[in-house]
Length: 152
Image 1 (cartoon, rainbow, N blue to C red):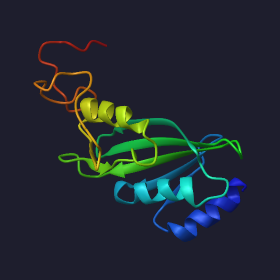
Image 2 (cartoon, rainbow, N blue to C red):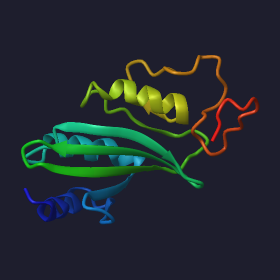
Image 3 (cartoon, one colour):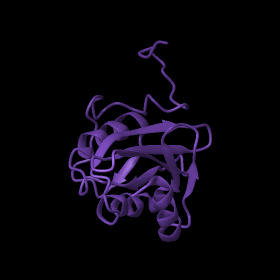
Image 4 (cartoon, helix red, strand yellow):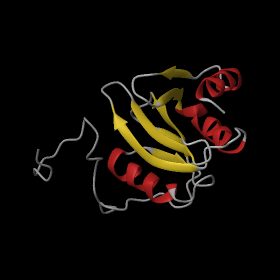
């Protein structure tokens, strides 16, 4: 399936998503509450499906947070970026994709540890780099580093 066909199909199935063309990869913008359904759709309903999770990370913007997924279809050699917006900075959360890609388990723990984003339905969400006693999330813009552990 060509990318233009895919965009039409996605616009029908997920009218709440928008598309961004800033690079050579298509970017899909969607709210966190709809991200899991979109990602599952791209893996299981699209032919050829997006069968590889290439990257999973987060970004802290001044007004919101974002979980970024990069998916790849080995058959069509197509890559998509999905940016999932989380408006609630006080209790940021989105649904885990561990049931779709078990390899996401550690990546979601890393995002939780460093950004404080909760992944609901995660099998064992925990801090993996910082101790459980660590207070705060060092990759958030509002993090205060009182003992200068993080240097620029």
